[in-house]
Image 1 (tube, rainbow, N blue to C red):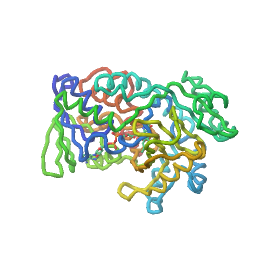
Image 2: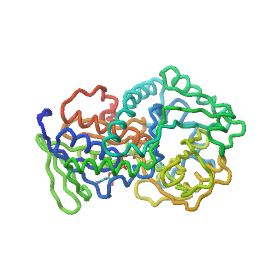
Image 3: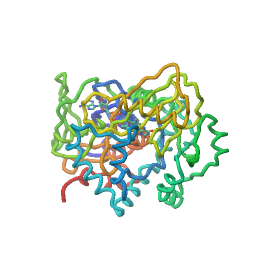
Length: 420
Ligand SMILES: Cc1cc2nc3c(=O)[nH]c(=O)nc-3n(C[C@H](O)[C@H](O)[C@H](O)COP(=O)(O)OP(=O)(O)OC[C@H]3O[C@@H](n4cnc5c(N)ncnc54)[C@H](O)[C@@H]3O)c2cc1C
């Protein structure tokens, strides 16, 4: 297809924050877009996440020494990680790639790539929220990071040295400062850090829904159906849906979160994309007032004040795609939250599980397939998909229209997982 063509026909699979943002950006530039999802927009991982727009989250989960922490995490009763026994062997190749991504030289490359992608996330949110009526859902209050001890804080010293060097603002809070910002939080002998650049959404699911709605207002066609088959020829792409529809277009955008693995698999690509499950407990009418997102680096829990109450989220569970949720993980998050906010309760508590589309090097796959250039990948954003969704949508639209990208996409290429 001629990339300069005025109104290319595009199919976007997946109406999470990533696919909805792709559809909106493409339609704005004049593409004829069909957005397809088996659920309603903003229902999967994009529904129940912690809502944080975290520009400074540039560090990969794998780094020198990270793999050694895994056994302790797995053994701790309320620990941040679980692997279901059935997933133990299937997780091994992914853990191997994870370990390899943690070599010092590779970590530097990953951080550089993540910085490049994070560079414009705030401006991309400014643009998309302003034009989709979502601005009222955004707060720019920063985030407070807690460590239970000075020893825990010292372990992250390298991150603060890097942040300092790279110009990400942060500030260590005195206990008095913490008390004045968050009177209900108890920290004992721990350390609190404030990161002023963080923002959060009061309802990430609704924000995603509104982006999709704005795309529909711009003429995007909505199809509530499941894609079963994808194929790509030299001049066109086609999909077949569960209900038997056959659709053709010039470009296919795969933005199906963790389910993208099976779709690119049909086109001959094997990616180590897994579901890293997370949970939340949503406390309606909480009895304690929390004003900022508060994250514990020691207990791996995040408390976010939202429109519907206080969301307590986190955890990493490797359980495969289709096994039922284990809501003990959501209850463990509540116990960890009560360590800092004793007596935390509310009128209602609802529990939720979502699947982070996670690659071992913590970077997403962005850009065309190596051989089928008319298929564009936009998946695997892991812990930062909300943050990077609007930016990804803009980049995908720039690729389709043959515009200047302003970012080198080679670190995000699907080919990085090909065996040497
Ligand atoms: C507990 C938790 C907390 C998080 N906190 C944050 C945070 O604070 N900040 C942040 O930036 N990120 C956060 N994340 C990560 C973020 O939620 C995800 O990275 C992001 O939502 C992924 O968006 P997506 O659009 O790629 O996928 P999804 O939202 O999962 O959407 C994929 C869509 O594709 C559809 N689909 C799949 N296969 C098909 C098919 N064959 N046919 C049709 N439709 C299909 C699905 O139905 C789904 O709607 C968190 C995640 C979790 C679980």
